Length: 262
Image (cartoon, rainbow, N blue to C red):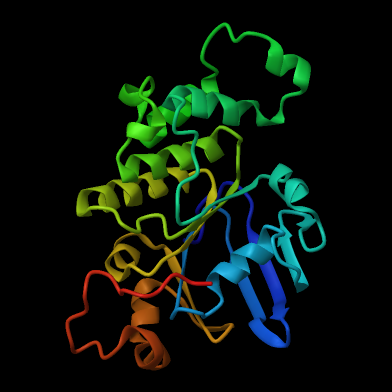
């Protein structure tokens, strides 16, 4: 990747620790996620993946340092972190089901506007909304109520709602859970398009999806980083094979069924 012009901002995590009632869920994690990376966080259930993202987005208290661009995130409230261009999705899409795709995107696009501008009637579709519709492949569904969308389409809409807010770091929690093969492929292609101008971090349990689309991988285990590198490097790591991926001589299932991470 030397010589490549990378867009967006990078995420730097140093000695990140999160403790709940004496239990250390994230135990001294260091991460360097370059601008424009499509980084996958994988690991067994309870490895600390979701808690790490919760710490980055201000949902749990943590110690150490998390820097995005030139800003330290730890200690900032959730809304301040969001204003710095950081957005996330959860395992269940949160969209306004009774509103159309276009209305969902328009509301998200207006999130930074003041009350007076929100009250003024829009004379057209904002450019950011039009671009998000194109990027997510939802242009033809713009007038459909979000509630009638397929499972995958709701996830794409939620990603679009982050794009119209000009989010520069997207943190996605199992975005392809419950999707069909076709939806997973379309989602992977969407993430590739999004990461052309932004940094994307994906928590994932679907190993086939990770192998197909990850640019880099961090494996977490017991709150620590066990291994990092390309997909090939991580899969060749004996420690990873032992604790997570299993013996590589045996065929692996398309997805590793695990309970939802707390």
